[in-house]
Image 1: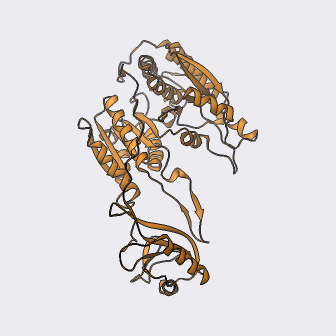
Image 2: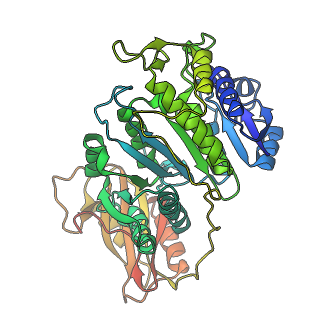
Image 3: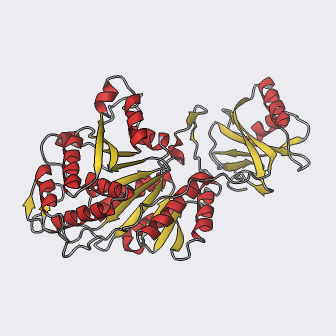
Length: 478
């Protein structure tokens, strides 16, 4: 018996959660439930996180969280509960199967059967943003080796565990050579350990186009956070409907399972909502907690129900569907089909062994780290790079020299183009005159001199070599 935490959420949440629990209990799920309240009522009671400390305690104790969609109130100050939960609990892997149900649910891709594995904790979703000048704001893209290793290994282990043959990596490392470059490098390193799994890499733009056009050529796709967020919704929609898709969020200690759609408050209380997305999340939960026999029974009954044309309004189509039903009636139909197998759709057969588990990440031996320069970012309202260069050269710190100025990443000094449009945000690179590196004292002196001369330095980024390898970007045009 596994004790789980359940949140019925907002809008259609309570209806689809009740339907989901009715189905999995009827199938023999060995679970005990602690129910908590999260979402709109908690937000409006003054809790900006949408969840109480007591509820956190229950989730952390039980480790398994089945959550219906919630409503985040409009206006500033309210934090996304989904993002908060994923980060606080270390739920690094977001897994979204996207499978065609043709010909019973409309799709242009009847052979589609892919799984999106999305890194869930970092990338641009670190949420670190600053306005730095009148004209420029920044968002930091953070990619870590532990984050890459954990998600890549999870994708490959998932493929092996569920009998899938290929894992594809999507990045944009032709442009973001350090961040996406690390993700791609780690993918290649770890994929080489899995000789039984085919692996490949695509640049995200052409990969996304190919996925939207011919998704049947892909099997498991692993991606950094932002790309995975966008493409998992695209994949779910082209498979048939976002409303049919479930999601698991897996960490080293805890896991959360949910539908990927929202709370749809306009449909609340009308017995109309399709519980399939949350049910798919619950099926993933059953596999995760080591009850694959129950998960298999529920999934095959659900496929049988879809195949019989018993559909809720969102997927009902004249000439294909046989009966339009409400939330409760759909759940009852699935329960009635427990023990049955679909005839046209492919039945599932889940692994009967232990649930998929991975070892915890272990830190690597630190590399030799050498400080070789510094980028000083300056707020300056002028437009002539030669003019700002003249000011910066006069900072006059022994052992350093100004080597480059960029504007929005484009080199504008020396030998820039007059046609390049410049904002008020300038990256000014100082390096050692001898090539032997600089010290933190050099940086302090540079900033002290800049302040004395009225130059508005807004931030610095240190330039490092790790084990002798350059570990910072150059300017475009460099």
